[in-house]
Picture 1: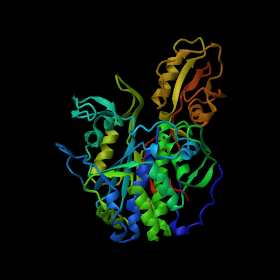
Picture 2: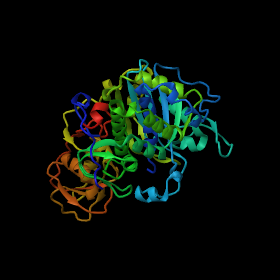
Picture 3: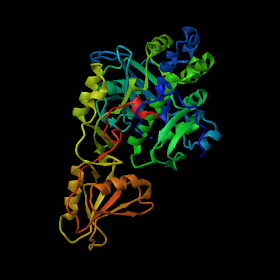
Length: 483
């Protein structure tokens, strides 16, 4: 699609120093992004008068009702942002243009914990994958009234079973972080908000094309309108990174939104400020303690925010595709890494100090843990398939663990067979198999095949070149936003 004209260049003093480029049934993150942006917009210094009357637009919910044995309060403020599917409010024309077909599920998709430091000088955003393996506390099903004992679920299922209360209880149980405020938002309002702002700029070092959402962006810098931005954050088929890549794009977009909101004159326009906050708050549900006064006070404290004041990460993950009986394929957290991360939130410490230490591995475009691999033995050497599978798994690739014999058993040179839509993943896998041949097979899907040949000797360690690519390192706003 044509790229809208770029806005005039900002003075060098307002630019990020070192740019670093960083899913769905629904585009929940846009809802979360716009809700968080209200606090940033308030930093324009506009008085309470601009917010007076808007609070009545906020629907109220009590997510903390009768909650006991909660985590000990830490320092700073923790906001749980939850998104629900509200595509029933989209016009037919918008549904067609932005590929928003299907019935709304009125469910949650993904969540973020937004931590605002006690000195109001830093915002730390932690994405919680929607398919995270979780265990609910004992609760009563809000739909059936049936009392449930603790049991395993996917994190996003907590809302369906027990609404906001069970959602908060489950997140607190998993993270040991006390949630101070709850915000539940509708992603459709995001489209209007982005349009009121005049669009938000994103950049990509390579083309992004997703036939499911209609996203089609060439490499470069783009100013996206509301509908295009929705496509951008909903896309999970634009590369081989699936949900992880989608969360990273959501974080990049939020970083760009914060950067633009805090550096542009649009925030000094009272009418535009009122339009933006009205568009957002009209589809928000929040706890009683979070009102326009809190929004204003928080925004005023954030007046000195810069892109580097925000930091983004995803909870450390040990295993994708972790099978749980009765639940299905889940995302299993790295317990030790997650514990350190959430301790930092409780202690009000910057997350950037937990950036992943680098190894002397070959740099690749996609992290091994994002790449699904089926190994085939293309020789008559017994056990070669298992040996290759084991070694690939040892360096982080998501192998099936069940190697098979290839159709032909006279393969001399190891082959990586891949769908061209996952070419970056294929190149990354081939880098771990020195001398391997790359072979395209359109329509194969996201799982790559390795046909081990007689030339196989070893697997080389590789790592993602970008800290955001599956290594779950912390990225600050100036690293995530455009130059």
